[in-house]
Image 1 (cartoon, rainbow over the protein chains, first blue to last red):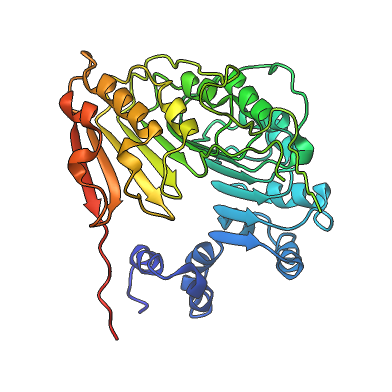
Image 2: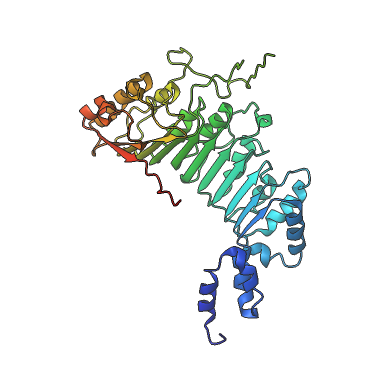
Length: 237
Length: 144
C-alpha cells in the first residue's frame, strides 16, 4: 500500500461514498485529508446536535475541514441559529458551491463584504426569510451563480416592492426555477432582468410572462410544472 | 359552519376564460426555445394553462413539446374539450410558422391503452404537418 502513488490513492478514495469516507480517514495518515475532503463535501445542518458538532470543528482549523465543504443544506429554524453564528459559519465555507436554505436568511452582509459566495454556483431558497429585493441585491454580487431556485417565499414577506436599484448584469443563468412566489415578487425578478437558459415554473402567477420575456433570446427549455389549474382562491366555501 | 379562505391581494388570482381582466400578454418571439415540457394535473388541461400557452406566438426553433400527465391519466372526452381545441389551434399555428426550420413533435405521456383513439387528438396540428407521438405506460411485471 505504501508504494501506491498518492494521486492514485486519492483517485480511489474519490469513489468511496461520502457517508463512508470518515472510516477511510482513520486508516492511515496518507488517507486522512482526501477522506475528510470527501466526507465533508456535502453537509446538512438539520438539527441542533449537528450544528453544535460543526461549531466545535470550525475554531480548530478554519482552513481545514470547513474549507472542504462544497454543498450545504441548512434547515434549522432561525430561533436558535442567530445571524451572527450563521455568518461565522458561512465565512469559513470558502469553497462552497451549492447552498440550500429553508426558512432562513441569506447572509446578505457577508456577501456584500465579499467574504462569502465567490465560488457559489447554485442557490436554492425555500420559504426564505429574506425579502426578494434583498435577495436580488445579494445574488447580483455572486459572479459564478448559474442555478437559482426560489421556492415558496413566506407570505409574511409579501410586501410592496419598488423598482430594483440595479438590473442583472451577469451572463444568463443555466437554470431558473420559480415555485409559488407572489405576483409582485415575480414581477420584481422580471424588473431585475434575470435571464436564463432553462426556466422551470410551478404554479401560475400573473407576472410569469414578464420573466419569460426577459429570457426570450436565451431560453432553450421551458418547463411548466405543478398546479396550473383554474382554481378559485378568492373564496372557498 | 362556513369557512372562507382569502388570499392576499393579487396573489395567485383566479382566472376564467373570457374574463376581461385576464392579462393575456403576448410574449416576444422565443428565439432560442427548443423544448417545452408541460405537466397536466388531474387528467385535464386547464383553461388557465391553455390561455398561457396561447401567449407564445412564435418559437421558430421549437422542435418538441411534451404533455405529461401527472397523478391521473386522460379521460375519454379530453380531445374534444375546450382547452384542447384551443391548444390544437395554437400548435397548428406554431407548426405552420414559416420561420420554423424543423418539424414540431408533440409527445403525450404516459399513454394508456383504452384512452381515446390517437387519431382524435390534435387534428388541426396534424393537418398542419405536426407529428404526434405517445409514450405508453409500462407496468412492471409482478414478482409475486
